Length: 344
Image 1 (cartoon, rainbow, N blue to C red):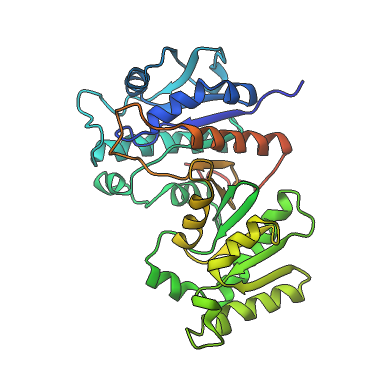
Image 2 (image 1 turned 45 degrees about the horizontal axis):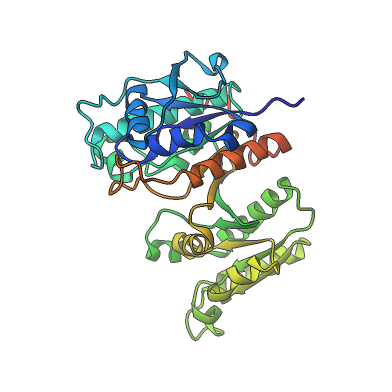
């Protein structure tokens, strides 16, 4: 019998909904049947999360992943005394939240790099709290890339069988437009094709979204399609890749959803995020490509407005764990071998 994958779930920002969705997910029979999970974070915060969610469970503090009890009704916790509940302000931006979130993430990376766990599923963090804590990263992806020595990371969403890749992420729209060069698009296409192959698609059909309305209308609405996107697609086809585009963004995601394409390369953050969240907000899962470790994540924020109320849904957290477990079982690798001592 194949042993269920061993996965770490990070607590996220303790002032947000991360602790609540984490405890809900780890008590889910679906998650229990597919994986062996534990939470990295402050057990005191998780106790409060159980209370506000109206859940009854035993928190078992462990020294490391090798010590998990893996019992029904028990949540194993690698305890970090990072977020004193007497000081923590639920639903507020604060340095304490950023510090605690970062500590859990660093530990998860160290464990993954040491091959003590099979992967990591992350809960939401808050960029402003990270800034208040003077953490020099804007998000999870940048942290994982830096501390694993990844050469080039990329985000992929998986939703209802569709894969959406992102050429650019956390930059302004103006900056994203500047970044859309032939070289960058060509590299993005190569990375997409490689990832799809790792996911088991022998000859995937990739669509590249257009940047401008109606695909630019031959330069009437902008020249990015002519000068950067089309030449990159031509080069990709010359390599034997099956690539279409640039396909107008108002239709490309629908066409992929009904099966015309296996995946879409989105050019900027909101272009792909809006499409995915309109398809199914709760079941959109983010996967970071190009890392030497497996990392999946929910695709929503800290929801400070409902934090501490017990109202947060754990559906996306459960989906993120399920995707991670599935990739481990299938032996999917979406990155290179770890750089020596990168997590130190």
